[in-house]
Length: 215
Image 1 (cartoon, rainbow, N blue to C red):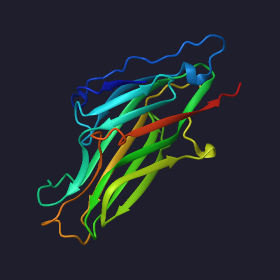
Image 2 (cartoon, one colour; image 1 turned 90 degrees about the horizontal axis):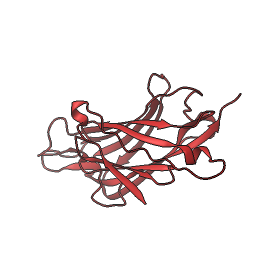
Image 3 (tube, one colour; image 1 turned 135 degrees about the vertical axis):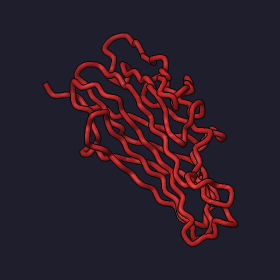
Image 4 (cartoon, rainbow, N blue to C red; image 1 turned 30 degrees about the horizontal axis):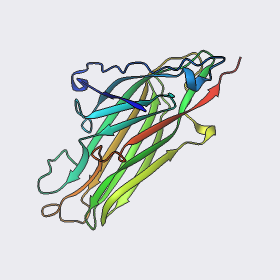
């Protein structure tokens, strides 16, 4: 069962804090069982105030972000800025002493309608506050296309963006959607790509992988 938090007042810099989710098993709990995720804020043109819903799994092993207005488009009714939308999530992920974590996989789902000659892309960047290292991914789409899409970011164990042991930083996840009209006629036809929560299967799921710190 998932608990849901809607990020509020993000456009005005207010903090929308999720109630901590923490398991308290008997015996010696694993890092997964002791993990706490606080959603500090969601902000960007793709997730304006009140349009991003964050759910954290009861076992603290994953969290999901669903969007209701995350659509990039070009066309006769699109504004000059609609070709690009983004959403940055700031997460305060608390872990037990002696352990650190990294994003291991991220699953993205959405819908795209691209005219022949148009193209789009879905990009993501993962980085810790105050760190220069950023893990980036890019997934292109080419028209003609009309249907659901799914892409998965998989980061190999050797290149996982681990937080340094003993440090505490917000984990920032910046996603982006772009559409380019290419050779299509955007004065007559609309092309768009979205990550949208109108269908429960269209969401973004992040998972974490643990690494034990050295002595």
